[in-house]
Amino acid sequence: MLDTSFFVMFPHQLVYGMISALLAGAIWLHIASYLGWPVSTTHSIIGGVLGFGVIGRGS
Image (tube, rainbow, N blue to C red; front, side, top):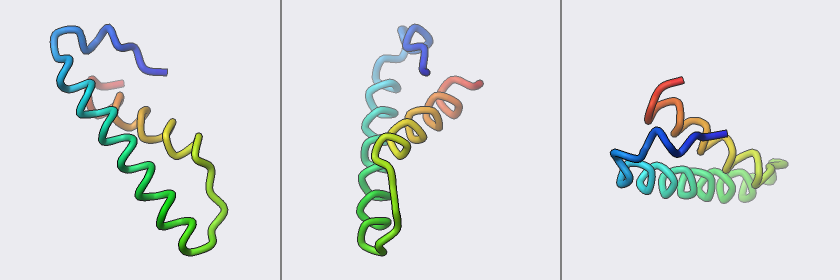
């Protein structure tokens, strides 16, 4: 899913990206649950990590 070897020279970027993915997933889950929408925790986190990977080091 995400090759962490691309972040060997920038480990702080990997940490910030993972924290951002978790926070974004948590915020989305709270909003969707509050509104009563069906939502998947796994899809939320996977989407956050994939988005970070594309933005952080390119496709």
